[in-house]
Length: 64
Image 1 (cartoon, rainbow, N blue to C red):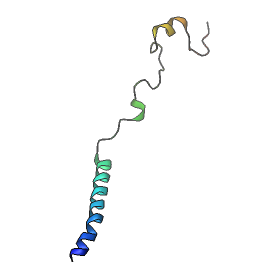
Image 2 (spheres, rainbow, N blue to C red; image 1 turned 90 degrees about the vertical axis):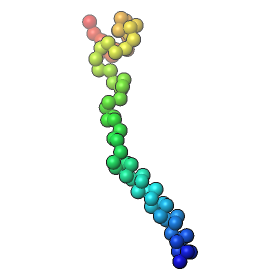
Image 3 (cartoon, rainbow, N blue to C red; image 1 turned 180 degrees about the horizontal axis):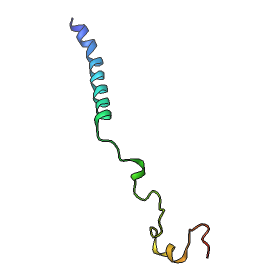
């Protein structure tokens, strides 16, 4: 009887660890959305450094 209990102990420990991990993943706080990262895309003018805005450097197809 003691032998069976000792042999089942690692399996029960692994089961407890797995269930804790899954519970944290399912019911934990969600990560922020991928599109909410800062400075991912700059679609509006004025987001760069002052030198880039004055010279117009880095703007593709900037016309008159």
